[in-house]
Length: 243
Image 1 (tube, rainbow, N blue to C red):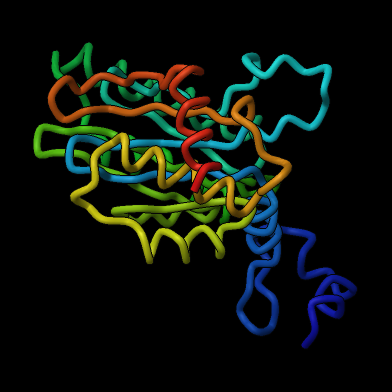
Image 2: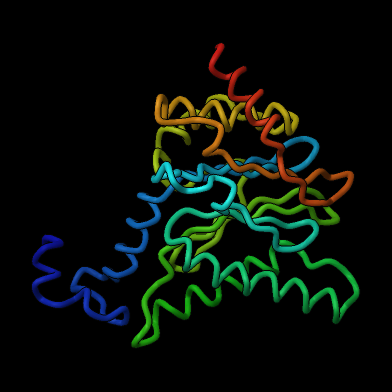
């Protein structure tokens, strides 16, 4: 049965309604929203973990610094997204609250996986409750726990996986192909930044400039979220363009 027939028969009117071939159509719509969102890349490196995001500035009157695509969850955890940013903010605030409560209760930093599971539990509830819709967003969570750097990808249905390198959003297939060829877990954060920026530049090409870039890293030594400076991003993009 074709998707249009499904829509005409009303199988996409409620999140709790399965189509005859076992699909939740609103979940598929949410995943489509993510695939059309701005690109975000996460890399686990030898000395930490890195997140790089395209802010995709669509209006020349927008202040680029005012567009936020990477959020700090705790001292040692950050997250980025692709999809509906307002949906992401709800999940990010939940993750921040979870991290704060853990620190106050146990006087220790929360594990990245605990934050991921809590966020994904809420996402999953929104796939089986009437009157709700799925969150139209995927999130990449990067953190450095006591046993090393971690990177997790979550999708709108509440599934999560741990990755060495991951990409979500526009151009996902092309950038994933680049990562499969060029990613090396032994590369440094600086090398990872060049790889991520280069992948974004190769896919977005002449539409891409450093004002669209946002990046943070967390080293295994300091376990602190550090924002990559504009000067560093400018320099990296110039090096990529010279290749």
